[in-house]
Amino acid sequence: MEETLSGQYESWNAAAQKIAFALWAVAILIVLLHVIRLALTTDAKTKYDFINRTEIRTLWYASVILIVGCCFYANSRITELTPLWIFVRGFTTFAMGMIVALIIQNLLKFYYPFFIEKRLKVLRYRPRISPKTGKPMKLLSEEEEDAYLDEGMQAEENVFSIDYDVWKDEETGYVKIEKYAGHLHALQCPECNYQTFKVVKEEILKAPTLEVNGELLKHFQCGYCGYKAKKSVVLRMSQKFEESSAATA
Image (tube, rainbow, N blue to C red):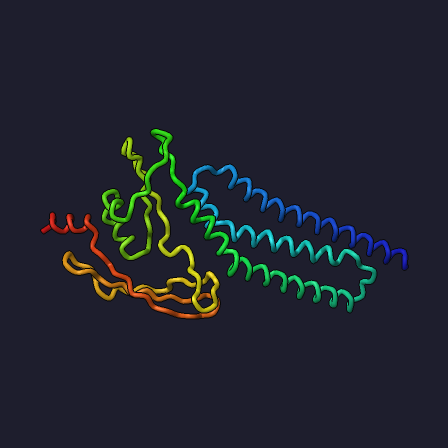
């Protein structure tokens, strides 16, 4: 009887170790595939979008799989399988796994954005290379770029929902327009200093006209400590809107 139980324990321990190793391999593979995809992506805007859209989620999935693997490995040294021990080990392993997962989740949510923001900023403002000449292009200023944005694009920028970067090859006139979400990234909260201060609501208090600037009220809230603040922003009628309005009149 004891030999039978010993054989069952050894069988379970061996299976638990194999599952743990397999899960660890999957977690490492997920991260490696992400890194390889980044390495093979040469376009700065494509890399920017890929990092912003998938990196935190990828690291979270890999972390969860890694933690589950650790839970199996922690239970690969079974010497007794009574109902009480199964409950105790299962509960302890689940509790420890949840604690570690919560710590990693908070690190990815509140700390990692500081690191990722720096990388994204470098990618966004890295000089683009013209496919026409192979030379670096010029990033146009807010005033210069209006000549290359249609009225809809300018309207999106005026209410800060979308931000456009316009790169121009001054030698050939080739233009590349890149689109970014206006509130894609959180700011640093002045209260808790975490990168979790986001715009949650916008109100146009006064619409801009040809003669008078408008006013936009932005409502901020921290996703960590709940701190709230408001900021008034001046809205200006762009030059292209002025020309359109004059032509319509």
